[in-house]
Length: 263
Image 1 (cartoon, helix red, strand yellow):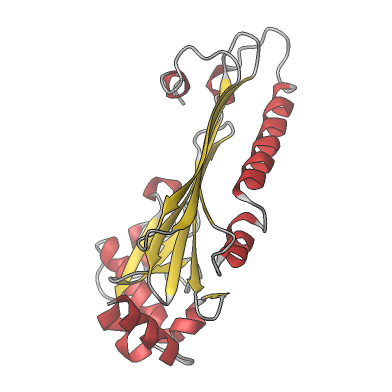
Image 2 (cartoon, helix red, strand yellow; image 1 turned 120 degrees about the vertical axis):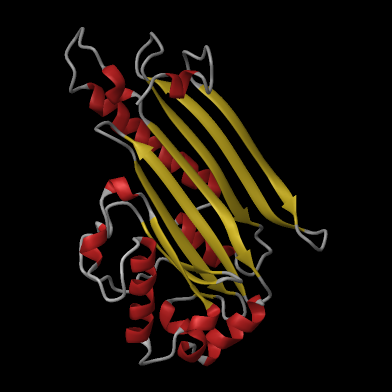
């Protein structure tokens, strides 16, 4: 990890730096719906200013008056506000960072391994009268060969005030057909022939099961796996989309209603 990743972002900073903004963003109807929270900090490990840990948060919250706000915060922030969530994460990584310092002796070269970072972003992916889809992406480096990236999707059924899972969209008994569509999409992604084992394309297993980490939009139903979940780090995150037209016969009544709502 290069030092200039940190010091070109906030040049000349040798002590704690804080950039924080919390503001309300207007909705389509002119009324405020979303609150954005942004914060960037550089936390030096020593008085010399290098190495340092960079923390960046670009988070989204819903106003208290929004019917989805309590569910959204429960799913995405463990019931906390964005400010509480960011403060808790900062404290956790700050503690781990300075504890890692104890592994070095006096005069040791910290090297690149102590140029830590932690970034998190929460954004709105899809919104319709029926559903809202949010994405939460985090990326961290805490020493070692490379950082780790994680991305999770949250699909909210607005009328029911609940999180949607695949069983809500796909009718009972159609799981096998959906699994086949997902594996076909992964084979296509890996340039494999029909029925080929996914291991021939570098995946860990010959086939994969349905993941509940998915999102919905006008294109269809997309499934996401982070690095190391079904393939090596070198393959990066894996995401495939199953178009609505391929799901037509697999949809539950609720799934069909969602599909029509997203058209």
